[in-house]
Length: 69
Image 1 (cartoon, helix red, strand yellow):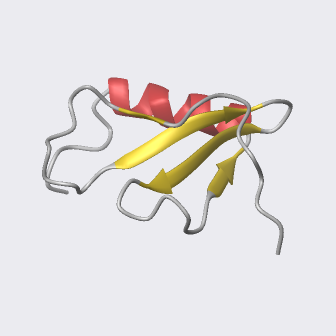
Image 2 (cartoon, one colour):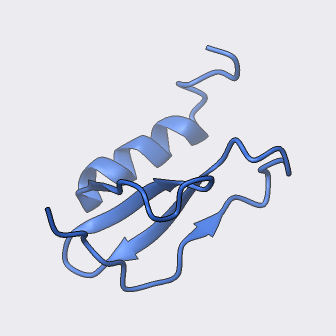
Image 3 (cartoon, one colour):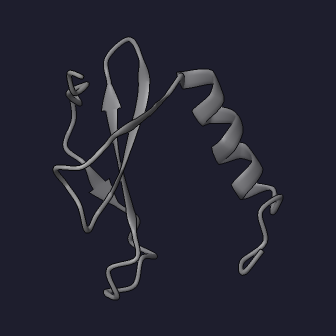
């Protein structure tokens, strides 16, 4: 299986703790957002279409995913 390569660097939220339990995101031109586990940068990448990613981010900002849920 070929990896989808991001067109921007992977980045981690500034809210992430240094504990290592983080995900990183990067843009993929024409496809949306790539998401990976920060502890396994050579592991699998999930790719979300731009519309799905925008809906997820809007849901987070609206509090639809409470912490600890």
